[in-house]
Every structure is written in C-alpha cells, then in structure tokens.
Amino acid sequence: MPTEVNAQVVDAVNLANYTMLANTPTATQGFLSGAASYSISLLMLNAVSAQFSGAQIAEATVVTSCAGILKAVAKAVG
Image 1 (cartoon, rainbow, N blue to C red):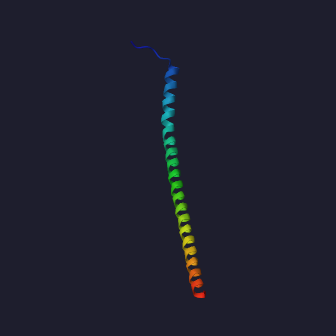
Image 2 (image 1 turned 180 degrees about the vertical axis):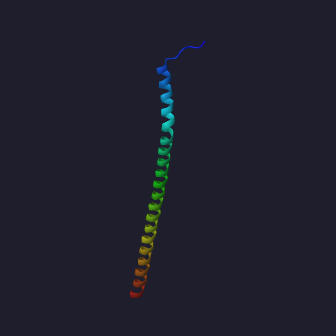
Image 3 (image 1 turned 30 degrees about the vertical axis):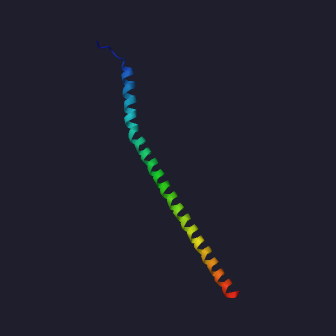
C-alpha cells in the first residue's frame, strides 16, 4: 500500500545522498595523501637509520684502526 512522503523529507534524503557523493572524491584524495605522506615518512626514517648505521660503522672502523696503530707503536717502542 503506497504512502505519500513529504516533499521536504525527499529533498532532505536527496541532499544527503548528493552531499555524500560530492564529498567522496575529496575524502578519497585525503586518504591517498595521508597514505603517501606516511610512506614518505617511513622512507625518510629508513634513510636516516641507514645513515646513522653507516656513521657508527665508520666510527668503529676508525677506533679499531687507531687501536691497531697504538698497539703496533707500543710493540715497536717497548
């Protein structure tokens, strides 16, 4: 049995549907931008971590080399 619906209710539902459909591309773009930002931040974090690890290795190499030189000098002198 069909019932009549108030025109204002129909307009409100149509407006809600239109608003949802109109906002979907913007929301999607926002989500994609957030995902891209997160990926770039992880990339930068990995680059900084690799650079820090390289600096630690370089420092350890210098310390080991200096220790070897000091041992060789100590043997030669005494």
